[in-house]
Length: 265
Image 1 (cartoon, helix red, strand yellow):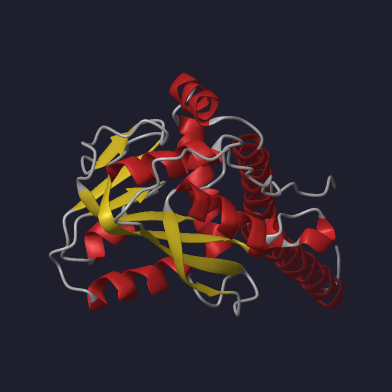
Image 2: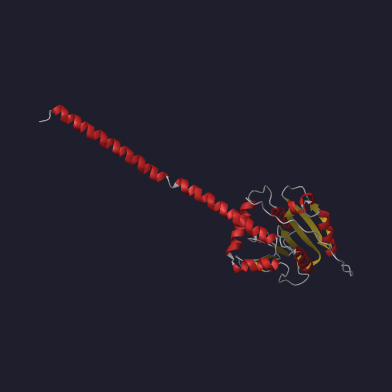
């Protein structure tokens, strides 16, 4: 028979083994609980990267095709439009100043009686903030207040609006036809407000000379009232439709606005 001392030693050894096993089990269980955090964080980063990549692809497409081609592109798959605007809002969140905010303040300062046409309205933010009557146009409508159309063919009567807005929306290669449409629907003395990405007007890096753009827009039948090149991200142009239009039609030489093309990674 084993002595009492030997039995106690065996029992002590078993208890230590059991305690060590429990510690390893608890450590394993804890690691199992914390493991999902890393994959979740990784997946979030991958989703953000994929979303950003899709936005760049769609953005480049819109800068290098005509308005009717873009309309057909989104009509084939409206989900791409949602993807684009999600990426657009993400990109704009990094801008310290939003050009649309400046335009909104300008409209507010002139009262609610002005009728506005917002070309490339996105989520129709302008219409939701000002008290004016606003016609909101974009390629796809995800909101009852947004009219889906090609911006070169807006469903409005001639001489029917006081202000036409293009906020970062002169994207198609046929952008002059958008401005021609704005000229058609504006009343004599009506306003044309344009905000565009600054790099598109950098002649030292393949962009258009802003003076050539001003001249072409004036040849269309507008007078240049003011311009603001002070912001690092965008330019602002304020035009007014001439009350007396020239009977002589000029051949307008439009500069090519530089498309926003992203570097391949």
